[in-house]
Length: 187
Length: 113
Image (cartoon, rainbow over all chains, first blue to last red; front, side):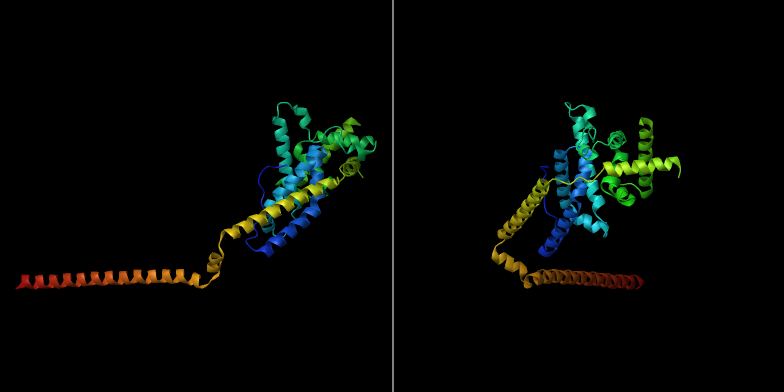
């Protein structure tokens, strides 16, 4: 949990505008809590840290919500939220990598034995695809998490990753191709 | 369908199966909502203490439109005074120039005589 002091969005000095802004944020929170949590979970690989990251992401979003809403020109704010979670997850891995007592191997975002094993239900192929996913470069893995766990389209992923639509399309294509190659080699 | 395409569809299907959305635990919603309540309460407290710092007469004074007019009148009056000074200075310079002109003409006449 961040120790940084938080403050409510400004919304000028108009209480009605402030209330409206809080309502809009509340809607955003309810609509995307699962997205932010899923993304955080697949990035850090455990529920405890995923909860912390999710809370931090929404607190940061709350602080900058008014501006984000103004600058979005009516576009969906999900990519912005996921971008916040993405930055926090990157900081999380950077901080863990700096800790001398933590071996670098254990900074892998999705540990070999993670919670989704329950979902896998003994299917060897699924276990294999998750294991190969761990070996992808970070940007490819992130794009696949956004696409498959969150159901984001190319444009949304592009906005979340700060890339062009074309570059994102290529990124996802290469990620899938690399997975296919690795699975074919393994199988 | 090409062999490569079949392999791709398979991987995408596997990814969709493996990367299912994860439901956040209920305690997380409670925790986040509690934090937001605290922030909102803190903001409300801060606002009310800020309002308390101004006395009622100060607030009345700020609300009174007559107090908004006075500064405007003062600025206007200042502008008029500055304008008047400029006019006086120009007139003074004008008289000096006229005096100098008269002196020059008188000097010129004297030299001719």
